[in-house]
Amino acid sequence: MTQISPTLTEIPGGDRTAQPSLFSAEFRQETFALTKRLFIQLRRRPTTLIAGVIQPLMWLILFGALFRYAPEGLLGDGQTYIKFLAAGIIVFTAFSSALNSGLPVLFDREFGFLNRILVAPLASRFSIVLASAIFIIATSAVQTIAIIAVSALMGAGLPNLAGLGVATLAIALLVFGFTMLSLGLAFAMPGHQELLAFIFLVNLPLIFSSIALAPLSFMPAWLQWIASLNPLSFAIAPIRYVYGHSDWSWQSVVLEAPWGDMTILGAIGALAAFAAIVGMAIRGVLRRGVA
Image 1 (cartoon, helix red, strand yellow):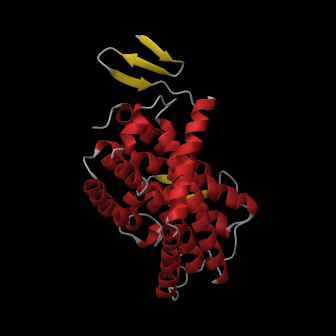
Image 2 (cartoon, one colour; image 1 turned 90 degrees about the horizontal axis):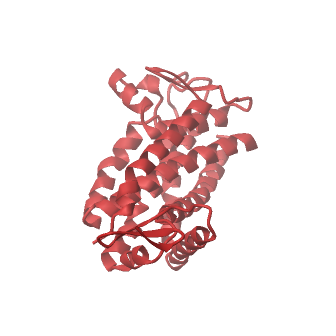
Image 3 (cartoon, one colour; image 1 turned 90 degrees about the vertical axis):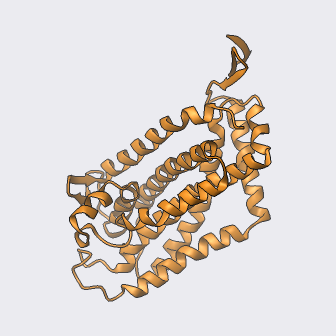
């Protein structure tokens, strides 16, 4: 094995693979450069962020009005539907952005720009994933602030600062997991049409098979099992709980699933496990070259 650089090796046969050095100055520099490029693109096309803020607000207002007079007791603890819905809209918005994060990379791949990145002596191709995740988390933060502000004006109230910290952690882990999944598919799929088909296939089914729009008790037994194992539910449940409870703890039960109770700590752990599993699954795809 011939040494190319402290972070890059060459395998006989011409295949090159990056040895991750996630704490090196080179890795930080390339992550910053790739992240900066995404923000430059956003500055040139600000309508994407504007539309990304308006769409969840439309969901919040329309669904909130549609189910405003839901029967008392359906949601438990005297909770209003706006307060119940706000957590679901926050998570769905972040999830949708993360699921679409592979599209810019796939367009870069089709136009040949991605190949130029991959042949460069990167400290780790994981910088592509991290840059996309940072960008999605930043834009999701803007969307989340808008959702929280509008839902507060509609009577949902505000979580405390510690609750906002839990919400931020849950959203970050969810975004990280689905961003890695989307980028893995962008590397593996033949073109953007296939990725778009996948996004359209799973986007709405995942949100409707979660607890975003209705509680588990409102669902048939088979759907309760699906919703209680849905990663979106793992993020929604703790955010929804801290919205309505100022005296929460890490051991507070946030989801009474058919298979058992899930606490805030358990939900955060499940999201971290989901992100870790996706990360392991896409490692081989990131190491391969792109034709």
